Image 1 (cartoon, rainbow, N blue to C red):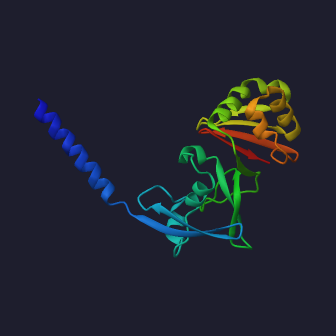
Image 2: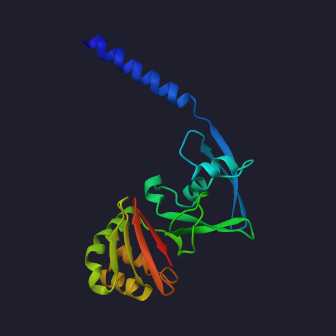
Image 3: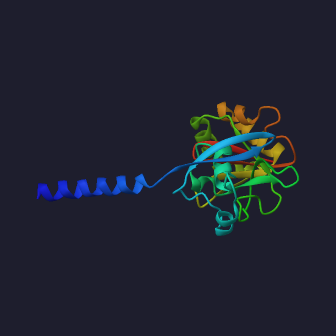
Length: 198
């Protein structure tokens, strides 16, 4: 019986090594806000937004999902699914990420709020996530996505006010000047990261 389990274990390890052996690192390039990026990805990974992107992307151009992963590091593909890449057709470069649906190239299907990752610790992200339950009273809408992300949305002033009332290090990270500037905004807490879209 022990021999059978050892044989099964060896077979499983051999299979996983054989599966991983076919994977190859590919280099690609993208332009982000005037800076040329040299990125790489596993060619066996799910990095294509569509069959069209896979077939029509030429040369060493990075697929959209690879660029989004670069702009939102530390998140899983599932957590990044609610974001798209803002692409400037005229300048032929990426600008930022935004909330919203993607087209066949991972780019924003329609204009949306531009987002940026806020420099917050995992503890601060959890703190903001806990606040989400009580913010409806402050004129802030709170919702969870299927990927488990918490989205707080409303007028930037209402968000800033609710966070200031809650206090703590998390509120300080989001109430820094310029973070919640503008009219409407949303704060997305996903995978231990905090992303502000406005």
